[in-house]
Image (cartoon, rainbow, N blue to C red):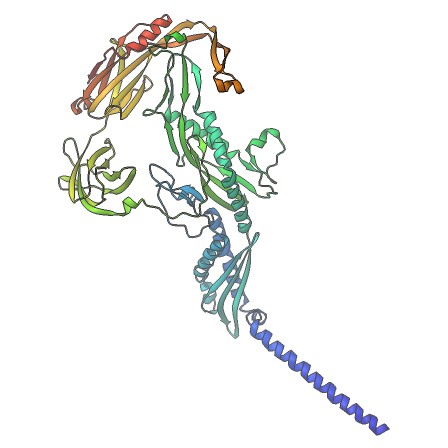
Length: 632
């Protein structure tokens, strides 16, 4: 019995030993696999302390380059490498980048040829640009100071992986780096760095603000309000003299108002809450808590598109109603006005916290007094009119002034409503000439533009090879004097209009505020209105008017009408300025007269009106009385 038990114990020991060997083998295999897979991660633990400063420096170099690159990305609207630059034009002065302490690409803008464009970088694009940048910059991390101290540093090929998170940037650099110093040697291939940065968070908030602007057009709505508060848009005033605004002054008022009011726009959050009722107008709510400070910026020296209709030269003018022939029965005057604006400008949106910033500009576009309708765009490509792509006919264009001296000029070709830039004429000997291919068109226009000269147009078909000569008229700046039958205007003022080419071009001057005018040789119709102080009182009145209107209901089907009466009330009015002189004259202006540099216009004196009938008579005399026009 005892022997049998001993036999059983021996077998149990053999089984236990075998199990132990199997477990040890499993651990060994697992350890080998782990070492193979994570071999780069274990190198740091075996790095001798004598060479460790080299690896610490390399990690700090990666961190510093990443931090600097993140700051650059934030200041350049999410770009390290800027997208291709696209210039603006006379039609739309925005380029593809805003110049603000460096180039900042627009996220939304209208190109020079009128194409709406977006260029918003994705987070993946930001990460890829940062990755490629770090490959180049990290490879330039200098170990010269260590090498001068006796270290030997050998570098292998480099690659990086970058992940941008809300509050940090993870950089994983793969580069074998062997370092030896005296008897110590270490090798490390994986270099992981974590950089504190709000780039990802700022980018996410910027995208939210941009999406809200696209959905609600809140910047355009602010712009329309500013336009109606600081510029003449719609309205009417009582008076018998025209209302006049300087186009330049209106533009200046708008730029000042934009600069002040744009800064007042805020995003609801930790830095600005809707606590005060009067502040709600300027606060935009993204629907969630915003922890960062957001700034909206416009500067008056930034590009702006500003066009207004109707306007003449640099003047906005509204004519009075009530003085025209046949309207004297009204017994009063009023000045209605309605101006239409195309008004566009950039706004820079900045998100910041301490030294970190993310900024991007957008173009705010107001079209015909209303906010633009945000189209569904996805980074539209550059669109060139088909006509301009097919320049098939070679032409020679010569450009001269009226003395046949060569004038270098910019040449465009216009066919129907499409205009194409062709090139610039350059001086060759006694000529200024451009040889270039033109789009094919019958009876299109060659347009020549040169500084100091009036833009010239020449009808020219371009279906066959040919030549064209364009003559440009020089602009002359003249000193202007307006008088009334020999007497200078003291307490009076005059409105002078110069109409050229049968109404195609009109220039208006308010004298004596404006005492200079630019003119070229040509045929003009000159018209002068002289206004003097007046105290003509127009009495108010009430008149009951009755008219027949269609009845409502079934009886209206049979043409039944009923009488409706209303009271027409005309308010009392004092005419403070009235026409006291003027006239109209047609005159051909020669270049020799323009060279004198001085223009004097003597208007007929009608006398200051004292009653309504004389007021209308004076107004009608403008068409019949002549002017005395003298140069020199």
